[in-house]
Image (cartoon, rainbow, N blue to C red; front, side):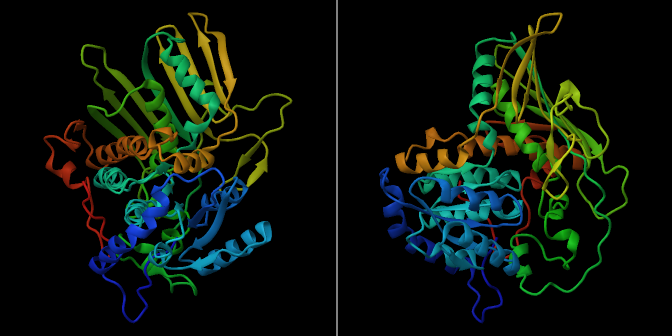
Length: 464
């Protein structure tokens, strides 16, 4: 991930940068806005590589007529390692950037693919849209409720194709599950649960220390307020600090939140109530490691629907058989570092949807149903291979945003549920939401928590 180099003798101001982007946007947009033919090569830049971004750099070069032309990250050791890996795999060395805004000046780049920390997602996406680039942005697309509105507004204003990184929506088996629910497979759907039980150990406590060589820490903090460098505030563990992340409900959990909302066929809740805490460990983590959020969705002339979301970081059971070891079946799972290891999966990550005639279990492996009072096994299907990046590229060629599996507005709505749950948890009370005005009602404190104080020049602009 990378941004303006504030160590330069003349660091750009936000006003000058935005003005420059507006001037640069026109020629960039001419290429990206045109219908790109099947034989035209699409040039993609990837940003951020200390996690999910590695998948971005490995996937784009495998797609037909797609070229990975630039990489950007504020940690130069991570950046150079990824550049070398891409060069070994493709025989070509992409351009190297530490400053994201410098990357956007390249008019030949058609799209940027963003896998940076949460607090950067919206601002980077808006800047890219202003520069005439299409965007693939990892989940969650926004760090707060204000940003949820601005990122959608930017996609509309600058006529950009923006895909959200909730890739489950591109799995054919789960698409089939959504269709079967609409057809009434389990009767009237009245409730869904999202389960995010990921075994995570304590992060401990880490002291302030000098910034490591090659790390542009001021750029990494970007819109967030300045804090001394610690190992816990940097690679990955930033997820557990409010200035940068959104806890596990906004990390792993946003996938299951999105699936629950999709399968139930709902958008915004009327009321959200969340309780939990940071249990068991005495460490630097600020976000809860145990959280239960309940959301009520009103339907005019119909019955309300309920979404219940559970986060747990420690010992838990395999509810509804999710991730439960199967006799004779060799299993692998991701350890705490993200590396695939052999052995039973200690996590329980998925969804359960309840209806009047049965229930459906949905995981990354597919869906299965249990019908009637005896819960007899019903229709099921494997998830199939997701082609989320290919779906993004196809939409770029057609210029049809509606063909995206996870168009940015869908992502922003699901992220809104995450942010409402976190606000309820932090204020310790129920939050009422006005889906027409997109605001918390009757609660000035909650309204203030819909946004944050941005550090100049990294200010998320009001586009809407």
